[in-house]
Length: 79
Image 1: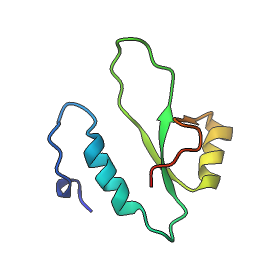
Image 2: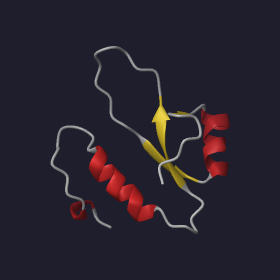
Image 3: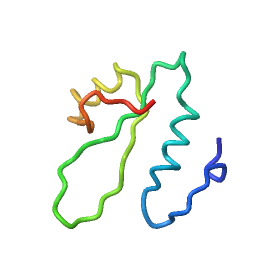
Image 4: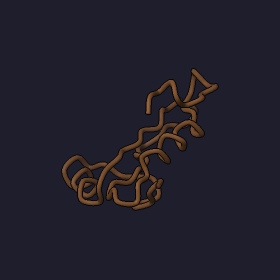
């Protein structure tokens, strides 16, 4: 898949519909990786980008333990 293959109508902010389409392309039954949305402290009225991580459960746990990452929804995955 190439970025041009996803129809995105929004150039100035995160296009969740395009992201969902990209996630669906990577969601294979035999792939242990899942998409997770990074969580972080947000300040009122500040703009933020969404950051997604494609990782196995073991990789996600290592990101938590070693780098202190947290994910929206805890262990919620987007496949």
